[in-house]
Image (cartoon, rainbow, N blue to C red):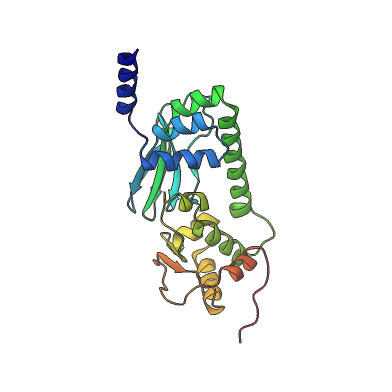
Length: 252
């Protein structure tokens, strides 16, 4: 028995320990409501990938990707933190062929969490907590589509402010777990042309809106120009008010 106990002790010592990254990813998935066992396997088989501005990724086939930081474009709209790239229906076989693939380009440096699609599918088929997470991701996706890109009674300025708010968001969960850099007040990446294309408005409309936000000391006045890729937010509360349809106070 003593020999058996010694062998068991040796076996325990050679079991690989989870890395710090895996532990943090596990905590992230558990924060999304995923059970501990499923979260552990998702974390262990996931990877964090760095992307430079201009990098391209194809969301299809064997992987699913979560934007952890940075901004991507699908050629029209802009997507930010915690946007899941590609098709969320893990129960359906991914369509083959070039036309079925979603292509994204990073307009700023960023990071993604890449998960094997088959692992996500396997756990979703037998674990309701994973299904609930995917359902919540899909609900959040519709909320962003409606709140940021939906056509309603808001003015172009309010829609621009809402887009800037959305793109400047950094996931508190990812920041807390040190999976992405902490928040600062500078939005990096998109040009004013990117913003105009995403909202379906003219470049002149975006330039006018940016001018109004700067004159009201919501954005810093530096870095003007159509090719500007950095926007310093100096009054987040007032930007939120404008995004929600409120009016700016008169200039002093």
